[in-house]
Length: 283
Image 1 (spheres, rainbow, N blue to C red):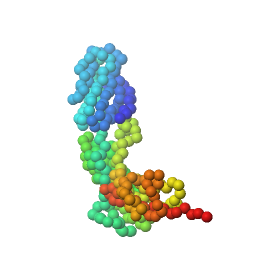
Image 2: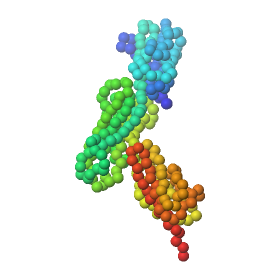
Image 3: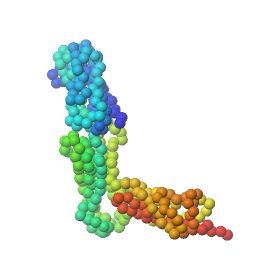
């Protein structure tokens, strides 16, 4: 993970704190390493880091580093202090984030095909994500953003969240793909681009039939985008063995004229496509 470092001169309410804290704010993935530097250019009687992990005892050095390997303490609050004319201290804000274990989409109280004109409720479940106050859940139909939800809870540890979307399908929605996306917007100090997890969707071919004229080289490409990744099966009276690849090529498989049906399947559903190989026209 890449951290973006910033420098700031810090002050306490009581007196000037002649120090620089780098970065100003630390953003770290749960279980990753983290570090921050604290330096001064003035004479002092001692400075150090106070923290439940990675504390640095008071020293007369001008630069000291707070460092923790495998940070798993959600509410850690490190602060640096310096004894100059009097003691002052500055806290380093630390944001620990965790991407969701899973993001799933379902239809509330319904199974089977949707009926045109009827209202349905889609539900998006985001499991084990933190911090929730930096989470945005977005709903899409295809590539079109329909709605988004943010959360106001102030919770540093992982939580589960659910959002819903009401839809009323019409004829133009036949074959439309709805999905939800969980994004952690962690600011400039966080990873770029922002971490995202998308709900799964079943396989869907752009067309259900494809005609191919047989020549020297024939390729049947059944590859389709889906989440989880699909498995492939092929059926044809011309195939003498089973194939699990998404592509069949005449350079490795005997592809005679006829019909070849490929089915892509994942845990959310399946979709089939028929390839029709025709003999090359002569004359």
